[in-house]
Amino acid sequence: MSHLMTTPSDKKNNPSRHAGPNLGFLAIVFTVLFNAGLYPVTASGGQLHYPGPWESPETIVAFFQARPTAVLICAALQFGSAIPLGIYVATVVSRLQFLGVRAAGTYIALFGGFMTAINLAAAALVLWVMAYPGIAQDSAILRALYYLTFALGGVGFSVPFGLLIAGVSVTAGFTKLLPKWIVAFGLILALVGELSWLDLLTPKALALIPLTRFPGFIWLISAGFALPKSRPAS
Image (cartoon, rainbow, N blue to C red):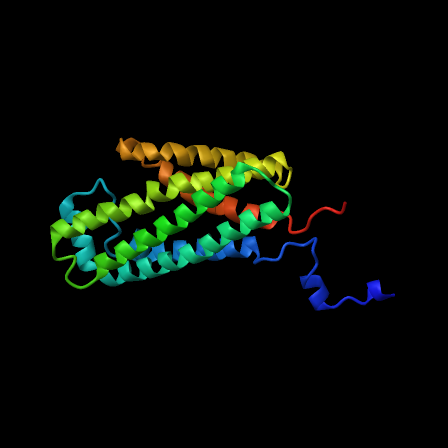
């Protein structure tokens, strides 16, 4: 009867179940923190909203001079969001390997995911510098920092984010670890993400960045909850 007498410790040490944080929960925390950071600097937060790269230099400088507190809050929350994203990346790659995936796609996902998290954190730290007293008063430095943070948080996010999604979708698709609709959705997002690098050449491609980012949040959450935690019984 010993097989009936299981303890919580036995369940945690179950070799057929992956030990790691809940992927879906990590994706939700990342999504909430990232979008909470956007609220103070968008039109939803009232007053002046965060300027786009097409805005005049005067408009860009005026925003950062008028709303340093909103920028500071945005920077802090988005820096914080990079942490659960990085943990998600490490966990999902570990999970795929635990489930028997032995393919380059897992390492592509790891590279893309860590690059996404690092660039997101770097963009947030540069944004924090822009909110520092006295920086916004130097318009030349402010504009240089603005375009740097836009590059890091724009294509610097969407292109590697596409690699993360592609790496997981392709490997999980071949091994049937994710539903077909999540795999197909992921492949479309990955393609859009890779094409977003064109924003470096033409502003007409700017829309590809949010088209990768925001639907990508849905994909992260869906894949996080759908990816199995346990190996099938052999």
